[in-house]
Image (cartoon, rainbow, N blue to C red):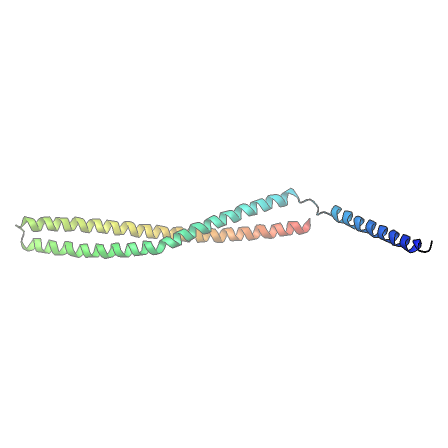
Amino acid sequence: MQTNCPMKNTRILLGIFAMLFFASVANAQTNTTPPVSIDVLKTRASLLKETTNLNKLKIKLTELNTQMPKLEDDVARANERSAKSAVESKDAANKMNANTADKKLAKKASKAAKDSYSDARRAQKLTDNLLSTQQKINKLNADIEKLKVKIDKMDQQLKFSENVN
């Protein structure tokens, strides 16, 4: 009988440990986090929406910034071409004035003047496009900064709301 007693004590101890283990597991499963309020969920959704908008603005800004060097090069080339055609037009006009009876010189002067006008218009359009793109970049930068402030404010509000609950 004494040989069964230590075995019996071991079984009792194993039974007690098993019950304690299952009780702790059951207790851990019942201690879930309290439900989150609807306001906190709405704030999280708004924060996610604003963060998405911020990322979209950043993508647009990056696209415009990558376009700027090409636009600047185009404007520089157009301005050079415009200046060159203006000089050619002036030279053709001076030659025509020296010999007013020559119809060939008159046609060349007329063509040079048209080319000069066309090149100047093209340069002006490209310059306007460059300025417009620069204004868009400036506006996007301002919008991004405003949105960052708004997101930070919402994030602080969310953290406060979560700490209160």
